[in-house]
Image 1: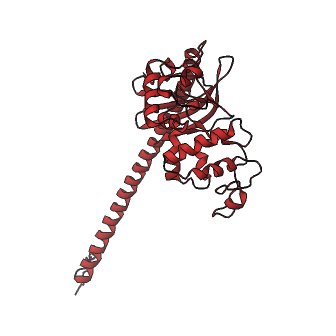
Image 2 (image 1 turned 180 degrees about the vertical axis):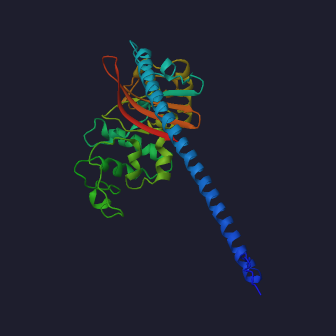
Image 3 (image 1 turned 135 degrees about the vertical axis):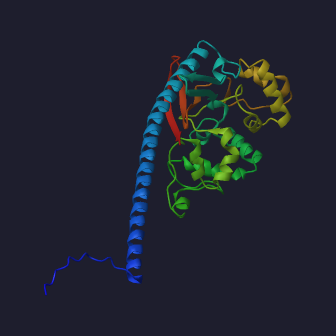
Length: 322
């Protein structure tokens, strides 16, 4: 009897174990697909971020260039505005804020302020002329803001090259080296008014109270009574009412001489000391803000008007977002 060989086909496994194996394989396949999709999404997101960073860098560079251009325009406008004039006041063209558009997407806003209308911290230096009267004025400025007037000693000590404490509330190296972290006094003139936050007693909240009224100029200067705000005028010895009357008067008729200021009606009967006061200025600050899309660039510059009528940039402070 002949036996015929039969061709047998492989039989698919069946039963619970086989179904479990197929389920695991399907889950693995789905997991791989999910991982690939997630990786693709992450790569696309990273690429989007890289493109945005590149765009922001390009916009930031452009905004910086426009800010520098705005600074140059401000300097030229200041020089032109004050050419041949005998006093500096807020009715002159330089004091008017400006705004313009460059192209379809860039907006530039610019303004100039008189730094000599503020109290110059470096007028408190031990070698400064009229040091005694300036100390008194700064004490008044502190008192008006609710700050201990005795801290005038700490401010004067900060720029003292000897770096030792003077007065009951002064502070030299010995005080600052005992802080955590320790540091030394400036032992040199203030470069920026914001450095006042390093001085004993001038925390950020305290500094914020007088920040709008102080400056730090490279030399001893006079206070311009044509541009000084009310707190600075009151620090000279004026009452709030007298200070407001001066603001109203000079808005219509700026003072052309210091004598005219001292003899003005609001000061009648007031024996005001004119030491350290003037109607002119040589130091200003330009504030330029450039907006391009989501990018903003701010440039604050200290400008010096020389005797030759030329304006030079002494200091720049930049802030760019985002």
